[in-house]
Length: 143
Image 1: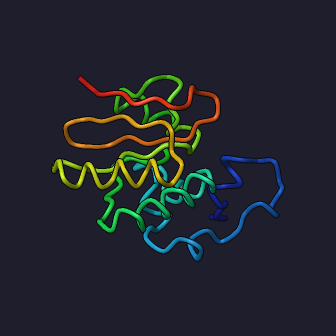
Image 2 (image 1 turned 90 degrees about the vertical axis):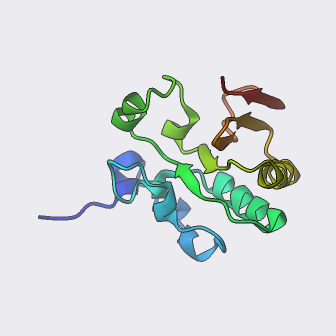
Image 3 (image 1 turned 90 degrees about the horizontal axis):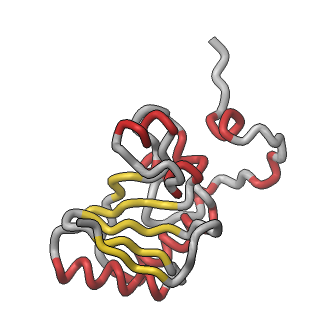
């Protein structure tokens, strides 16, 4: 069976010049950390500016970031009851595990310093995205 790269399937524009080996440019993350659980390699569909900023935020925070959700396929988004216009489906979002208030402060501060302007706070995770189709300068809490 012939293997097809996931980015070709997800983005059939055939503009291969935009695909740099981003794994080599990130210090703190592996692209596989952003894979949708139902599509190996889908982390390659993450927005490159998003990944660069997140890597910078991780450096600033000086604490680990465990990604619990990155890119999502439509099927996985439905399974986890994500919103229909989820930024995860476009590769503009990630959820970072966090249950400690000191670590939460470090992560949020670093995300803001790295230029993120969309942050959601839940009991067990922090959502961050840079979706250009959504309002900037917003912070929300999950019920």
